[in-house]
Image: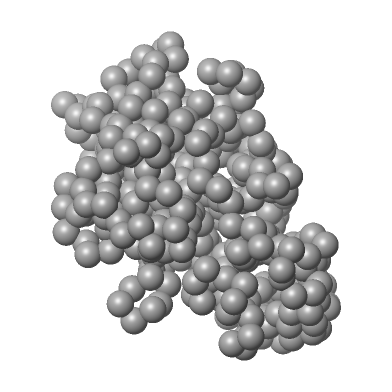
Length: 387
């Protein structure tokens, strides 16, 4: 009973802090965009001229363009920032993004907090043929109540520059952690990969707060896309936004894994299921990233809840799934093939399709079902585009 009293007190404290203090303490970029028809020529899709729902944990904002060589050296970038905050360089000021990232600093209304953002214009990356997970950085993130934590951020190199195409749910777990190191989170880089470094994903308890909110576990996850931490407490399935633009249509994906399920399977109410054994999950979805009205379309957790019927979604072209990942303590190869319909070539070549590739240590983790201790290792992923 005492732990629930503590949780209730914590929730009240969080609500009070957000209501009374957050407007003066926040220093976030919420949206960034370029206005003007004269700039449309630099983008494959006009929807790429705007970045909305930027996570409060994100510090890198990337715009994909056709070419840096032909890109204008005078682009005014506009921002929506949190109430009362200020930004430098000035909102709407003309900048040259052809020479590399432009650093913007947002200062909170009370002047006590600052956050720096790297805004980058990059040539749209070529479709990746392999992911070895050798590139990782340790980032410090501050939470509203519990101080700072260190997390691993995975990225790929595009023309020598970091491309932060990978996301995890670690920022959600960090909301109730203090002083944690990367290995304390559900997803982290390990030096013991199949070749060089790899990724470890492990299902963890969310503690008293998670149990109270019917979110008692946090599965280790890694996916191409973005994690919007702002949705974690209010709408968890919306927090995972899957997919990055891809200019070729994938046919087959292979990789290597190790897996050990945890000892006790539970549901969101912490009921035990002795006859159920946790399973890992690996799947991919290739889909149209613009709807019929020309708006940006992104798959989220709601869209992938039922993979058996995901092809009923008119936005989805193809899906691939690994049928089974038996427990193994040695590196074992897996493969999956895409099934569905071909995407129109003109849409694919214009970066009108996203590839979502998802790994999870608990197959039902998004529904907060699984076994604490389930551990999945992944490495050396290969994507084939040959038809």
